[in-house]
Each structure stands twice: as C-alpha cells, then as structure tokens.
Length: 263
Image (cartoon, rainbow, N blue to C red; front, side, top):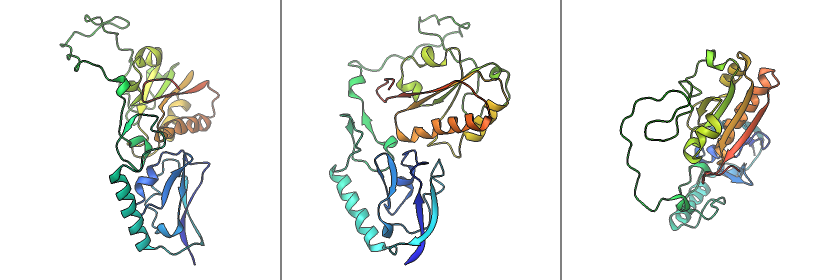
C-alpha cells in the first residue's frame, strides 16, 4: 500500500539517537552510527521522531510500504523489554566499562568509569575563600578559574558583548569540563567560553552562534565536544554557523572521552 512514512537522511544524521528514544514503536535503531528505519510496519507515520531530530535528518515521504502493524509492534517492544531486563542488550560502544541494560540514545547509557574512581572517600568541600585576582591562585593553592565572562550558556549569552570583540571563541559541551581535569588550563584560558548541551536544550544553536560570529570580531573558534553521538549536534551547529557567517576563521574540533582523554 502507498502511505506516509518517515525518511532518514543518513548524510544529515549525526547518530545522536534521540529519535530512537522518541519512537515509541521501536521503528528506528542505530546501525553503524546512523539512525535507520528498521521495519516499515513498525512506523505509524505520525512522526514523533521529527521534532526530536536536532539536524533535521528526518522527513515524511509517501511511498509503497507495509501497513502499520500494531500487534507486531507490541510483540517487538515486549521482546525488547525482556532482553533488556535480562541484560542481553548492551551498547556496542561499552569499551569494557560497566553498563546497565540499556536501549536508546548511547549518550544516556549508564557507565561506571571504575578506572577513575579514587580509593579513598570524597574530598572535603573547601571552606569559603575570598575571590582571587585574575591569574592568581586562591589561598588554598588550587588552580585559579580561567573563566573571564558571564553568563556562559549559549542560550543566555548576549549576541553583542564587549568580551566577544577580538575573542578566541570556545564552544564547549557542558559535560566536557567534568570529564577533562585540566579544562580551565587547556581550553578556557585565553578564550571566551560558551557552553551547551544539544540533547537537553530545546532548539538549535546554529542561529545564535551564527549571530555571535557574524556580528563580532571573532579570531578563532574551538569546539570541545564529548565522544557521545548526541554531542555531534554541538559541532554541527558550530560548523554550520561558521559557514552561515560568511567569515573565514581558523577553527578546530576537539573530542573528549568519558574517561577524560583527548581522542
């Protein structure tokens, strides 16, 4: 029969897996780092996955396709739940870390980075200290913050701000500072930092980043993202913003692993 069904553009897909979670019928799966429609009869054609896609890779098309089979969907979801409950399904990117049974977006999979665990208990919380001057360390001897502006969230920063003039712009995934121990020293120092999470923030960053780059004297752009596929939305937005700005600016993308390594 000819009916409306989803179509996934593999060129636009960044493998974030958000559509997999959004599809309640289990019609979409990640294969080879890309979202795929695995069976026509699992797709109800309602398109819950469309607004979830951060790159616009999913559209509707009308073509010959098997009719939506509600009973087959029910059996598939029951079988999937059974496998997950028994621990039979695990993400392909486990890399030896401890994972709970999981399906959906790989970036949301729980993992225990046992190699990074300290043998002792948690560190004591430092007592309140007076603010240090720029470039100086606090009285405790801890490294000084290299952050030189506020706010830092992409959604909150003004497009035109004095600190953007002549700036080396850092566009970072907000998780990166927690994974990479020397984040301030190696990435924030000498740069104006803006952060975000393409999976949790609504909308796309491309328009805002385009305006920041186009309307200010930005000297360079550094993108720091995590290895999880959903973080591809950040680097995608940054590269599209660079193109849309019409400027030729040096740029680079750095990927951090969950273990805190530069890949």
